[in-house]
Length: 604
Image (cartoon, rainbow, N blue to C red; front, side):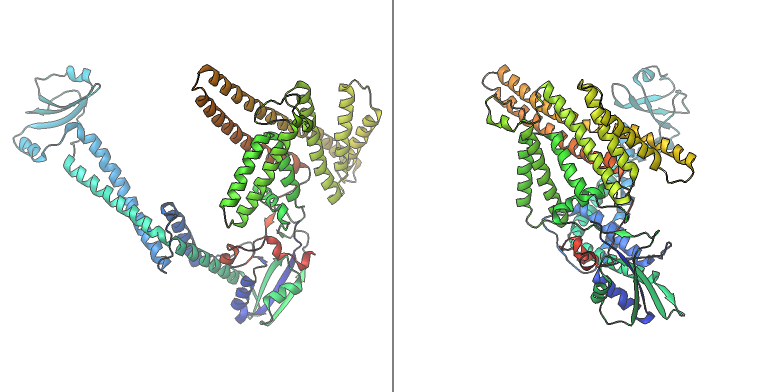
């Protein structure tokens, strides 16, 4: 559910402002209202950003087995990291330049550059060249003496020595550097970079210190932001601060305490207010909140779709994979993770509950679909009594196809019904009638059942509801015009319903893939006597792993897509403002009860 909010405005003495805001932050049950152009605490913000960037950077070098909160000066750690990063940023391009120069110069080998000066002092011209083997073979050797230093299949590097300027028709290369000096520079830079990275690893041991400092700075940032953006009155002798709270007025004041000279006024949200949204659900539906937040947060005037999205997603996910063997594998993995993670975070606990629900759904649809990792069932198998959706026969596939379409009709009708109940939107009722009357009309024609006058006239009534109530305009022509435009939504409606056929298609693909890998494994076993079992096992493990991974990907993507696109389109608005409690971040990141702890008295 979406927690009910009240708007509370506080008026207090300016001299008590900081102490009051500190108490409000300790209470941790309000969402502060800031002006559109809020003032940001620059110094604290910059310090927070620097600390956060340092923590993220050092986390790449952390040895997970040996973190320690050594020292107490996080600023020194940040400064040292900044200094090392500056030096590293200078050394890396220098090292790259040295290596590039070494790669260019090594074609002419190592030599003493003083010999060049000696030759030039005797008025000899020394030039360095590269040329293709063909071009080198055609050079005129009368004008200069050539000394080949390196020769490959495609290129010749050589030195030309002449008494004057020799016209070889080639552009000379830049004089090569001293290879020994370059090697020393490269080694020195690499050694320095290794030392810098080793120091990063040492500094990474202070990550707990940086994490704690980041949380404290975030608290300071939010506190200073609240202080700077509080309004004033009576020549700055009074401060004014407004906030939203899911608690009742009395409970909120009890949490703040009586230690302030304070006046307050509570009011209900008004039209046009940007009210933050706090979702409060029982633990069984909390995983649905995480799914909803993937796409968009509901707004305050919306409804909480967490439960609908959670269980519909589980059904779609189960239908897409639909294999009892895969369901058992997912269940075993989930139970292993639950046992392995001794003290899961709230997010991890919700994720594991979601995985448990999804694995049970996959197992359930696998049982009623008779799919056990592609192993065929004999006619006398007792599991056949549980078979309801048989994908192994043409008739069964048509049945599953029909079930997928009906599931889409139910799902979209549910969305329309929610909108009808919440907003008295009569076109939604019209579309529900159109969906089901259309189904019975088509069923009658396809089943050779002849005309269905009840369904036909029901569709007419549904379309009339859409035509007459899409617009509330009192101008009859405009109302009819907008109504006709609304009727065009039948194309979208038809498209959305057919989109649920992906449940059938993906489920069928998963089933065929399981059978295919089993057949390939059997062929490998028969093709190679005695040792054929080895490639057969590899094919089974690799093939079913790939199929399961693809099934999970398809289940997540398409299971959520049917909720977020096809279902949301008909009832959900979204684009809400999440409730952000003004609280100590360190406390917010420690294990605590669910969000519902904020919503007791005001939402009973």
